[in-house]
Amino acid sequence: MLAAVPDEITAGGLSWEETLELTSMNRSLPSGMLQAKPDGTKITVLQAARQMIGISDNTATDLLIARVGRERVERAVANLGHSDPAAMTPFLTTREIFQLSYGAGEGSAASRELQKLSLAWAGAAVDERRGILQRVDELPLALSEQGFVDRVGEPQEPPWTRGLEWFATPADIAAAHRGLAERAERQPELTQIFLSNPGLGASPGLDRTVWPSIAYKGGGNLGVLTGAWRAERSDGSAVNVVLMLSGDTSETAREIQFASGELSGLSQAILELLGEKPTG
Image (cartoon, rainbow, N blue to C red; front, side, top):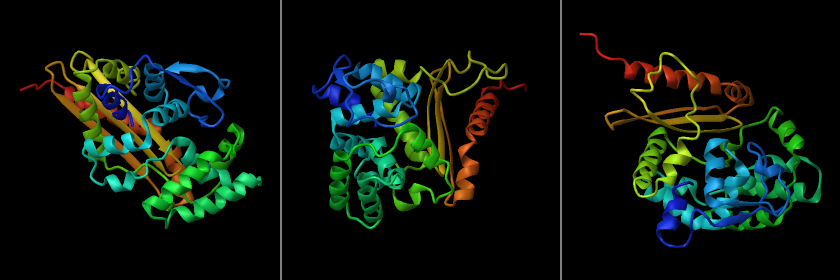
C-alpha cells in the first residue's frame, strides 16, 4: 500500500505534509494507537505512513488508502511486479477485513448484515466484491477492541481461506521492498519511514557496520504471519529476507499467532551468517 503514496505525490495529487482527519467511519482496530484517538484527530500523510510501518497502525493505513483511493493502491500493486494482481483486487482496508472476518458475531443488525456479506464474498466476482465493500463501508464498526480480541481468540477457520486477506508470495514482497527502495531515491521520506523499525532485537552477532540499513515490515492475521526485511550492506548491495507462515485450520492458526519471535530470530540469524567475513 505504501508505494501508492509516493506515486500519488509524484503525480502531484498529494504531499507528505497534507493533513488527514480521523472520523468514526474510518476508524479501524488494533494494532496501532490512532484508533483510540477522538474523532477530529488530525495527522499528516508522513506521520500516518510512519505509524503504518513503525507500529502497524491499522487506522493510519486506512486513512492513507482512503486518501489516495483504492484504485491507486491497486495500480501500485501491479506496478511493483506482483505475480497475481487480481488476487489483491479489490484491495481491502484493514477495517473491511475485520468487519467481514470478525464482525458477524456480535448480534447487532450490522453484524447480521455483515454475516451475509461475508458469506457472499468468497464466490463473488470483482465488481460484486466492490459492491460488498461499498456496503461494508457504510456500516458502523461492529466490534469493540475487546470484542475484536475475543473474536480472534475463538477457534475458527482463518479468514484467508474465504478470500479475506492480502495475498502475496515471498517474491512479491521482496519486489515491493525493491520498488520502495527505488522510490526512496527520489523521495527520502520513504527511507525515514522504513528505518523507524528494523524488526530485530539487539544482538552482538549482528554487525551493523556490515548492515547499516535494515528496513522491515511485518504483519499477521489469524492463520497468517509474515516478516520482511531489506538489509543494505555497507557496500551498497542489498539482501531481502521474507519469512511467511500460514495455516488453514484453527489449530495451526493458534500456533502461528505466537511465532513472531521465531521469525525475527531466524531473520537475524540469516543476516548474521551472511554478514560473516570469510576466514580463508
